[in-house]
Length: 378
Image (cartoon, rainbow, N blue to C red):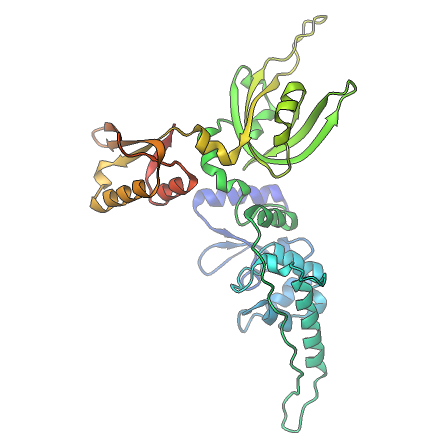
């Protein structure tokens, strides 16, 4: 019932290497459960607008076998317990992702008639169930059912990561299948020295330059009494959100970055507060914004060199061969260093590559991390 606590425990699960999976009509129950693979599965009861009755009928009707498709599900469950909103929010939360032949965007796609695929599916299910319930038994003891064609799956593009995650947060209160900043995790990790949570107390940060990043949330552009523009904007990172104010020349210079759902990288300096000439008291510290940029451009703009850290003891021909191929695949203009080290003797040898250069990108860093190669960016 407490989203902050759920977020805390999800972070703890990530730290422990425990998988936390989103809701699933074939696997979830009303509350959190553990599946057969030992992963924690979100409960369908966590989804707004999905009542206990809807969850109970979904669970009851899958006891004999899993649902094979969205059509299989709507044919079987008690539709009186699940309204249109429940179906929409189940889809938004990813509860139908287990059906490999459909994706989330399709359920909300309208093909010119103003009716979504999900609405057509519910209409189809109602007709199917009405006919099934009123079917007369024939002379041969078989139910004479009218066959209704299943609605055709619309052809449409899948949602982008931001759209998918925003809808998850809307119906569950938190991001489940990932975080919008995951695409920029290396930029955040290597080129940010602060999180937005630190701005709630600037006293200890006076005279320090801070670099931080996040997603722009609510933006409120305003005009002061003397006609000058300024703004209040919210920035959210992995752990927290904070409301900032920006004025004067800084506002005029950086206001084009203040767009909801924009991914920004900011550099700011913490100045001492103004001193009151009459009382001699000093006011609260204030932020001076030095630079705004796109998080998408941070690696390209700030990364100059990558240093690979290789343990001599664990090296073999296969790893060296893989590294050679990797450097070839990610050719670019960034400098490459290799630091060989031996833990027991505490010997370290740093070598600069004169001929080989790489393109530092998320794809390269992801590949290195997947293959347990430690690295440092400068």
